[in-house]
Length: 324
Image (cartoon, rainbow, N blue to C red):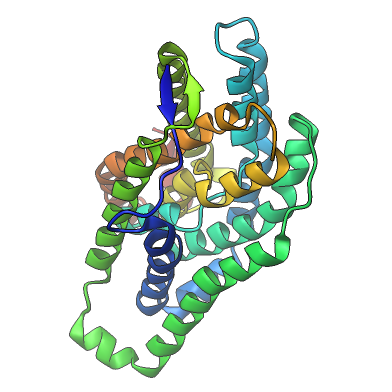
């Protein structure tokens, strides 16, 4: 048997340093480095917002429901299949997609807006989806979650924008390494996530089932990213290459920070609680590791695509190039 247990404390105390301080640093750093006009322009990109939220809360639950139906006759435990359904209902994370989008040179402003919007919507949509797909019901403390999101996402972002407006010339003249700061925080997030995921001891599951779930999650994650990449390049959507980069990360990531508390609230006292949490526990580090590995490739694609935009000034010809 393989045993897993939620781990907290330790030297880094990730339940504080990552969940609160780390996320706050990420959005404060984004607020300082991001031009206000870019953030304002991102608010008006309704096509991007609709794509992210619909893919997160409609397309992924539908696709994973089909996958679960196909796996009904497989050796996987029923609790693990329910866990895949729960995974599909989760909202996007507030940090990892933003960091990866920024590292790859994508539309950081759109990533920030949709990560925050998806997290706020998830407080209401995720419990409803879980009730519809798996069952069980409970009261989710929306006010506490809203307070946490406001203090770690919205407030640091606003403070960063205010400081940028007050010291814009100094910031541009001194060239603070915002990218390096974001990379350091991302490394801390990756390290603590892996330590937390692989130091659990309360979850009981067969080794082969665990390996099967890990492989399935990797395939699902890669497949979803390729699907988003392919669809987002369709010319009728009117999306830019930088938008595609943001969509690849924002649409396919799921939040462990919000997901686990919601699962514990809804399924408190349920005997299979530990097992149904496994797919999400596995998905979270996989999305960060896979995203980190893909950043250089995605960044190279974005640079090449932007270069060809100037070579193909005609929108129709450039759209034809993107389809290649």
